[in-house]
Structures are given as structure tokens and as C-alpha cells.
Amino acid sequence: MAPIPADRNKQFTVDREPLRNNDTLQLIKSKVRGPVTFLNPTQASYEHKIQIPPSRDHLGRTTAPLSTTDLVPPAGAPTLSAANIEYKWTARDNRKGRHTLVTKSPSVEHPETNVAPPRSTTHWRSILHTIWLMISFYPVWDISWCVAYIFTLGSVLWVINSLFVFLPLIRPSSTFHNEALVGGGITAFIGATIFEIGSVFLMLEAINENREGCFGYAVESVYDEYVGRTEIGDEGGLRVVPRDDACTHHHRNKTNLVGKPPVLDSEKQRSGKTNSWVWWPSWAELKNHYFHELGFIASLSQLLGATVFWISGLTALPEILNVLSPGLNDGIYWTPQVIGGSGFIVSGWLFMIETQKHWWQPAPTVLGWHIGLWNFIGGIG
Image (cartoon, rainbow, N blue to C red):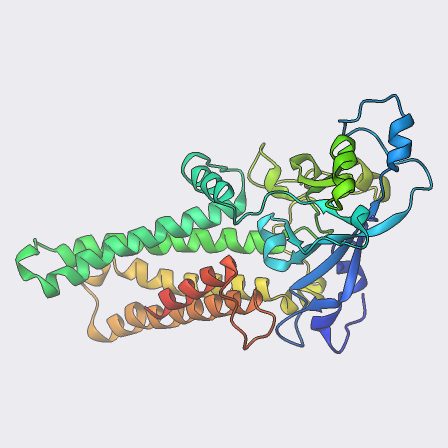
């Protein structure tokens, strides 16, 4: 069992450090952080080690084509940290199968250490591409996509439920026979059931995070561009590109919803075994890791809240709700709504905190923070 540090949020345990087997990434220990001192880190940054491409004199003597990504710098080529990029690991991104590069200002003094980054996700083309994928791409094998889709569908059901229950109060002329009892009851049961299923998927996502960490990018040589750019001191002869075949998250497994993630050849050489899908962690893993993991605690709060809330969804069915005494109505219909809704509130709050540098400092520029915020507001509602 790995020792548990006093300031747990500022350092990883040896067996849980992300990307520990990636020789090209160097953890920046001063940028390991978490919002709660007794919980695991939720953010970390890495320097990317690159081998400096051959000089222009070497390029002038070579007979190989210049525009190729297959050329490898010669043995003994200097290895330095990329000046204008850092890899940012976050617990949420790791669960969701995402990879984040942080771009910085290029180095003027050492232009050979600059790397051409991929197009920014805030670029208008990237935004339009993402919107198009949301409309046209349905990765049903991706559990993170399923979580988002299921909770969206459940939310739509609860909006419909509110029309059945609330609309007659503000516009009695729109009321039809047993609208609130039948329409409201059936949609409440279906909506609560969908939330329960989504919460189970959320837990499975939390306990199947990539324990090794995943970079998800490949560094390519761009020798022809390098020749021109070194003259003006821009990027060096390397660029970073996202590569599906460089990703080891289980989200890429298209054969089934749950199963082993893809394993790169380099990882197979380091380890003779791969992590298969986990349905529930061991008690030792729960005690030493997951009970200190914000994402797991938030997911567990969501599951417990949804399970209790489902009781009120069941008792909302017309055949049950119509025959309950006032005492039973309060006990097994209204009370589970209050307790279950509290679980939703706690879950949304924890998901917000997970994306923050400090528990008290909001992160409005982070998409995951807004997801937690609206879950929090929805839980109150």
C-alpha cells in the first residue's frame, strides 16, 4: 500500500501518478494541485521533452524527402523541454477521455524548442466542428457520451413532467382529465428511472478512469517547414497533433460498451498486463484511493441521491399515488424527493469544486465547472 501524504492534494501516490510511464513527459511538481487538502490532486501539468531536429546544415546534406513524419532525429540529438506547450492533466478530463494542451508564448531566445501546436479548440472552425459532431456523431460505445446523453434525456422528461403538473395551476383552461396524476406520474417514473441508469453509468465511468494516464498526442517532424521557420525564429521542426492511435482511454473501444482499453506497444513492453473493465473496486482501492477522489465521491452522491429519488418516481405512478394515505404520501413520496434531490445538489457542488484550483475559487472558463453548476441549480429545483 502506498503511503498517504499529509498534503494529499499536492502530490500523487507512487502507484497513481498519471503518465508515470511516459518518458517524454516530465511532471511539474509545483503545478500538482487539488481544491481540498485531504483529497487527491485533480490537476497537474507536464513539460514535454522533445528531441531537437537536425540542423539546417544536416538537412541540406540529406537525400531523404523533407516533408515526412517518419524521419527520426539522429542518436545523441539534444533533448529539451518544449518552450511553448504544456500538457495539462485533470481528473475530469481523464475520466472523460480528453487531452488538454496549454499553449504559451513561443521562445525567442531558443526558437528550436518551439513546437507547432494543434489548432485551438476556441478557434471558430473547431467550434463549428464540435457542434457538427454533436449533431451527427453518436458514439454509443463511449460511456462518457452515454452519461451525457442519458442525463439530457432524463432532463427532457422532467421538463415534460413539469408541464403536466405545473401548467394546470397557472392555466386551468389547459387541464385535461387526470393530467397531473397520470401524465405527471408516468413521466416522473420514467425520468427517475433514466436518472438512476445514468447514475450507474456515471459510477462505472468514475471507477474506470485511465490509471496510467494518457497523452493522446503525437509529435511529428516537419522538416520542410522547419527550414523556413527557423529563419524567422518561429516554431522549430516539430509539431504536436492529436492522434486516435496514441490514445489509451477505454472510450475508443468501439466493439462493446465495457471492456479493455487499447494498449500501445510501448506500454505492453513496460507492463505484461492490461487493466480490464472494473465493475466495482476492491475495499483496499476504495479506502486508499476512491474515497479520496472528488470525482468518485461526486458520482457516488449522485447514485445514492438518484436511488432514493427513484422511490418517489415509483410512488408517483397513478396506481400507487392515488391510494396513499397522507402519512405514506409524506413518507414515501415527498421525503425521497427531498433526500434524493439533496444528493443531486451535493454531486453538482462537488463536480464544480473538482474543476477549481481552490474550493472557494470558481472556474467559469472551464466547461466542466458549468456542467456542475447547472447540475447544482437543477438539484435545488
